[in-house]
Image (cartoon, rainbow, N blue to C red):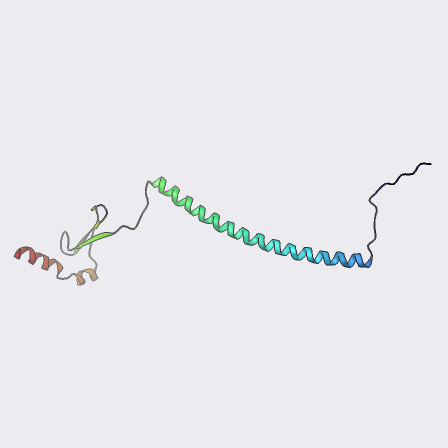
Length: 126
């Protein structure tokens, strides 16, 4: 009769020591899983912030291209009591273009109360 060795997967009942070790391994694996989940949540938040920044940048560029321009802060010169008393003209300093003619506010009128008259007096005497 011929004999041969083989390996099969058969049920093995854990010993008390093996059960204790498996419980310790499970506790360590659960702790590691919590750490990885926390790291994933942090990474997701960082990626979300990056994507939000890029989304805003893309939106701003898209709108600028569609509207063929954008609003920017531009240095301007305000001429009070011009072209007449109680009004002001606003000019861009970069191009000299007149961008607005507006009524002066009450505060501006008080602040520049005699400015228009002084300029007229200088012109008359000069």
